[in-house]
Image 1 (cartoon, rainbow, N blue to C red):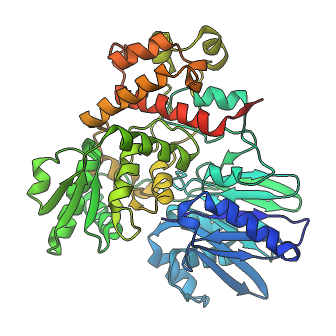
Image 2 (cartoon, helix red, strand yellow):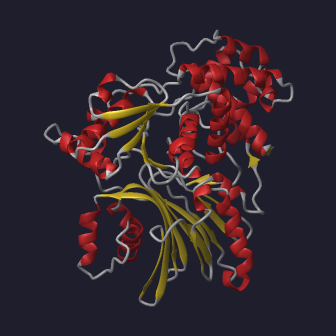
Image 3 (cartoon, one colour):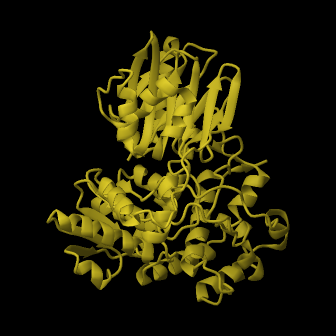
Length: 493
């Protein structure tokens, strides 16, 4: 798993104050566990960091230096590589970062129309004297940015931005409204002056300032009935799987279908698959030559998992999978084991569940009047599981498909929505944790929520009004929100 960071300052020569900028990059990187042993590059006006030589690459072209810090993976690489072979571009490393950098050097910002996959990257371009950053079409690899008086800071995690001594954890009223909207979608712009690069966007930073721009996507969905969905999906699954024979089954129909596809892939190569699960896997998995291992959950591991999830994302995102990923990392998260899990549909509409809290009188009246505006928050569904995984050095893989495959994959492999589950042992633990929070009079969440309403949620008498929001999801969210408020103690402006 890969996280990246960058500091840019066009008013100062960073190499003249090298000890300071080395220390500053170390502070930013130390917030992301996977970056503790990473490569860094400090030039005249920028400092970039990424783990490993395959993620941080420097090239010289026409006497100018180009440096990339890359996170993620590219699909359909061979046609692009062949196109770049013709003008004679050198591929020393043969990795995705090098392909993305060569493509940028040759095509400029138009290179984004040729890249498909799950990625974000930052490039220092000495020729144009600029920082060039980009996200994929779904922001599946989040990238945050902010600016100080003279510098710009970019990082895969919000904590990396907040590690800069000139950036404070200030939250605007709009950010607080979004935070309390209880939605699976989030713009990522909760903290004042800290922004998440939107899907399909590029960010240019020069001495003249900052420019944010949406890039055109030339690749349309191939949803024709004659398309061979089975072959396309199988190829992508095979590319993702590689030689790995280990995966994580979290639950829900999407995860089960992904596990079946991976098991079939491994079965063809006569390799057994290990499926880690927090509940009994379906019988079909056993018949596909799978070795199933179950984990148990207790109150301590559930709370620690939720806490790790909040710290990794910098936000208490609505999800009931987060703590399962964090707990999983303690068992197999060594960076050498591939873990697979399916994501919800990242193009799902923005849905706010605040009406459920309002209906159950969960907020104090003044809080409800101020924070619950009825507006559905804008944004996408970032790949929060990847952020959690990278903070614990898990090599997590999720089936993010480019636009051409989207319709096919959605209907063929992960068509049924499915609701992520919370194991019964974890549900009990979540309720115990919620009761402890309610019992502590100084719990920060009690400044916003009505204690009697939270007790009704604990007792199981909350009215969810046939919503697909589950009790486990809502309790997890409230616990994570309490952890987030305790951790950041944000000043509200």
